[in-house]
Amino acid sequence: MSAGHPDRHTAPDPDRPAWFAGSDEKLTVLRRAAEARGVALDPATPPSEEDAQELTDRLAGILLAEGGFDGDWQATPFGDLVEGLIDALHRYAYPDEH
Image (spheres, rainbow, N blue to C red):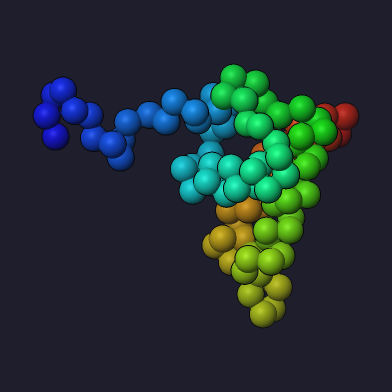
């Protein structure tokens, strides 16, 4: 890596929402959910209550459909990741509960 060419893997993502503190892996799943529900992730502003509810609904679907639980209904590592996203979005989806 030369001084004039930053490493692509460590360069900041200009489209990463400033309000989102999760890992890159979580952001990838969040973006998939947003795309599936037609929700635009604004880099500067958290999702509206309605958009956050759409995202949590889609994430719940991902949790159930994509191996979020093992045969004993224990969360898998991927399930923990998705549940963490749902928990993080809960304050935007249901602000009256916080």
